[in-house]
Figure 1 (tube, one colour):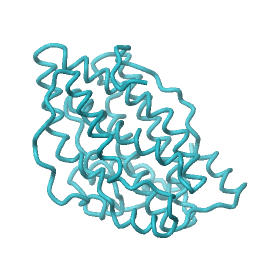
Figure 2 (tube, rainbow, N blue to C red):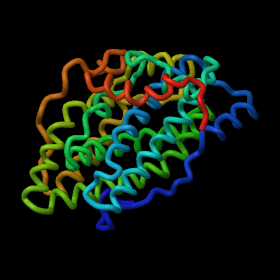
Figure 3 (spheres, helix red, strand yellow):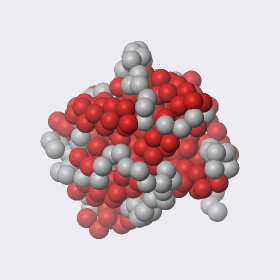
Length: 285
């Protein structure tokens, strides 16, 4: 499917992602738990998904169209689902549940990238972030579906189907805003300029990636190998939308967030997200 099409800007995803419960059943059935090195790598992916899903959930009741409330909410749930099964697999290395990893780690223990931590800004900023992350996730899960780690391959094979819809959604909105009014063009270009400095952090080969690759060759995807394809897709979409590829420099200290240091934005988001679970640990609905 072409990256750039002329379909509707709003899509519902297929909603058939593997669930955390299925991952638990697969682990129990096969006896395969994550090696610690693979778990560290998986945690990095899960943290990106969890933080981004929280950011997107904010748009419910605030999006520019009622249909978009549903679409962004659905995408947020898809990405939250990705976080759940990645946390479930990572947690198998340490005897921890998805809730343990999401709600009972300190903010400095998260390994999310600064891109997903950025405030939503206006709708143009959010769409710019979605375009960058969705294209990255599409390349990541496509390649990870061939992992020598059977569990990661199964998770990625399911996730990539949903991410294809996320890409289409972001592309269509980028075209709609870029080729729309002067104001919509200005806002989405400003969104690209704002998010662009954090793009390159997605492609940093962290120590966790190196350890996982050494422990299990072929199990993980090196982020640096995704850059060329993602940048090419980004350039195509941006140019089709009549926008300019930003020339702003990358943020300082690439890989900064992946090492446990974090932007000021993560702390506020994690504190709010964890507040109920920490006030009532073990509570069930």
